[in-house]
Length: 329
Image (cartoon, rainbow, N blue to C red):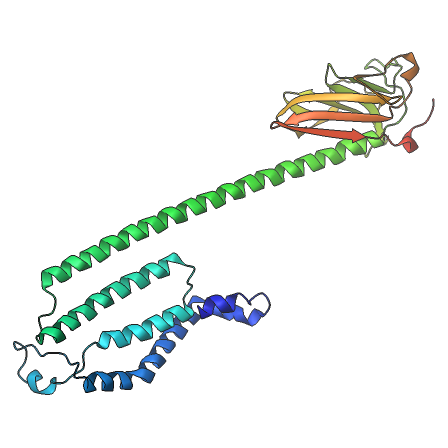
């Protein structure tokens, strides 16, 4: 109780974290129990002696017990339990179900012992509860405790499994979010740095277009001013984005006019893409290919849009090419 109260303020007062150590709380619980027993023990014994609540002496015991033990107060276990439970309730973590199980077991056996003493006092003999009944009650207490322990373990296991599943889902979502954010940054960087230079085929012939995009082939090609990934000093590189094996793939060729169709660096940006649509805005209208006609061969679209589906979720990137990187032939 006191421990749970103190830990509520541990974020504000850091020195209260001292009570989080189990050894500290164990020592405090022992000291608390001793203090309680010392404080009330004398009064407890005097009260029971005054009320003649004494333990009957067994006749089959040592003969000197009939003289020395006569008038000894009974119910001493109650005094011990008062001190024990005071220390436990003050310093134990009462949010821990295992602590409550131990409290139940200790209290149950304590009640059994107290009832045994009560029977001895009432009947004025040392027999108390019969050994068979006492054993039966102890077995019942153990069985109940095992059932409670099984329930606690089952609930704890389900909570742990649920927590682990939540953590895995969160980790996957963070990974997906990180992958999406990184891919978005790369695509937007490339498109915002498009250079208005006509593309060439792999034989060096002009294709008479700055950007070639086709929603049917799920592909877009353009020249962009990016950092070089090769020894080539030219900052202008041929960039291609396409859907390949259900992945959004980025290909960066070693030059703007590659003579080798295989001379590129491939990067799989996103996996499990079930659909990819690339569209281009011109005169406030979206088109599914570029160039639209002869008049748009050397023109950069106003906007370029990527629409795709990943894990049954739809995503849309709308990117505005940066005209600061564009120039006329």
